[in-house]
Image 1: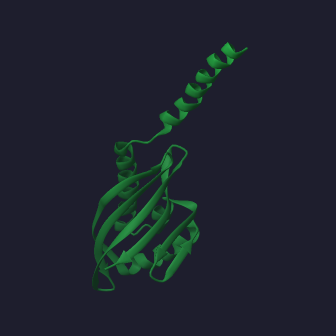
Image 2 (image 1 turned 180 degrees about the vertical axis):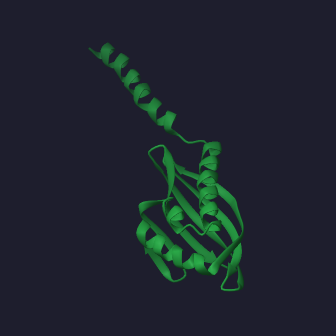
Image 3 (image 1 turned 135 degrees about the horizontal axis):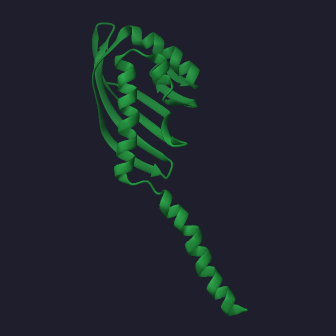
Length: 145
């Protein structure tokens, strides 16, 4: 009986460990995922497409700005629609990407633009989560210099 246990336990350990290893996201994959979402977000911002930008967020996403948090995709879309009337983007760049877990990555992005005729610069921190075969923004925190 003991010999069977010694044979079964290693097989179970290897069998259970392999799916975990297979799901681990690499830094390259994290950078690519962040770049894809950031590119789509920047495109939507440049086109002043609030619905397109909001579609990149999860349904229950949180966006934090100086005026306070915005909760949920529909509220984020509403606020972006108003902000896009006054904001013209100039530059956007991913400064750093980090792997948080198998289904979560983060990035710090810098941006610059004109808001109500005033030049602004700042940073946005994003948390992306895997949503099926795509990545979505779960949280964004914006700070302006």
